[in-house]
Image (cartoon, rainbow, N blue to C red; front, side):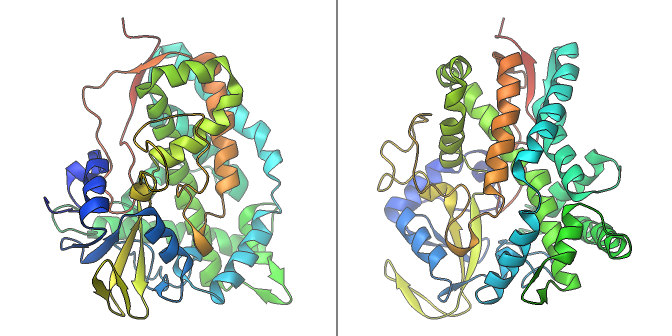
Length: 390
């Protein structure tokens, strides 16, 4: 087969035909470009995701890991440390009642829609999804009123890769350092002046006398920011793109808002923004005739597992009433996404508002551009206009 190059624009644009060939012919594939094995079948991915003793996260979960991140976040630790971090983070996270976010999410969505409808044309990522996700994140975390667009640019840079060097360049690393520095200052402020926000709750979270260290608070906060700013916004954007590409599905959702929730689950299966996450082999294991040795890097290709016919019938069909149990849109095993319920709720509220006021919309650009990332898949922009194509 043509080499599966994680830094190829063709993979960014449409990885699914490549995944199909991997699943059928090379289920444990060595990708020379990234120096990593790729697991593409659903059962292998789930098995590896649940077997943290063999497939460890302590070496980082990003294929091109950021400096000083591994070992200090939920996604880059194994039990028992992971369980401790997750319990403390969840204790802080759950102090913010998700239902309390309903009104702010609706408020942000309606304000964005007012601006969009005043113009008629818009860019979905900048003008809608990011307005809600970043705005909501700032409220939940109690962040100062800085330029939201600037923070979003820094987050996108920090998860991007450089195709020329096949990895991260200094600009990407500097962006992540800026995020860490910005949040470190915010954590220090909460130590001096606690508030009713997520950063304070993380700093104060305690279970049986155990609390997060300063580095753990800073890196967990950075994880929440990166997930809220980019991952959630990207998923909302991909969901809107799915409904654009499948107009019959969109019309059914518009006619019956009760279909939004199952449509979200199907989009998480069909076209998740979280495509691939890394593990490091901790003890020798053989898969499909390939002997994996301690220290080998392995990518769990969630986006491929979600299209595996062995798990999902007619996997390349977008069916909003499918209700795909066990999809990998939020990962699997110990590292299942902590913010999954919040992501579902915010997306459902936002798209309900959007489709009520803009039941018909169409792309205006000739060709979509996709962010360059070895882990994630998201459109750079979605230029749109209200109404049908004339």
